[in-house]
Image 1 (cartoon, rainbow, N blue to C red):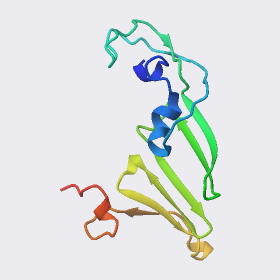
Image 2 (image 1 turned 180 degrees about the vertical axis):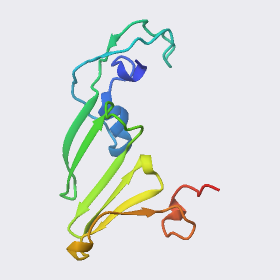
Image 3 (image 1 turned 135 degrees about the vertical axis):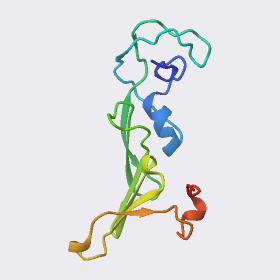
Length: 146
């Protein structure tokens, strides 16, 4: 249990806590509270002592939304604190008639790209590593590990 899961200290749930970093101003809907394991006696970052037993989560654990963008494009957003196996995934995908591109925070130095103008038998996502010094995107990326 953590302060992020208490409405009185965080208040925004998964959409405001996680998705706000990708899409901006959060909007939440009530979720189904679920109990969390004992918190022990570790104080919260706000100074209040944590309860010693399970407590209910008072914000939502997941949210889904379909958005209409100013450009006319349609976007979907999925946010979950309970995505087994995901550590800090922030995945952004864009699809168009000429191709698609995807970025995942868990694979920080990579992009996935699909060229839909290529012959069908050659289509498929390919991984582009964007951290090499000569890559055109390297100037706006993380420094290469040495």
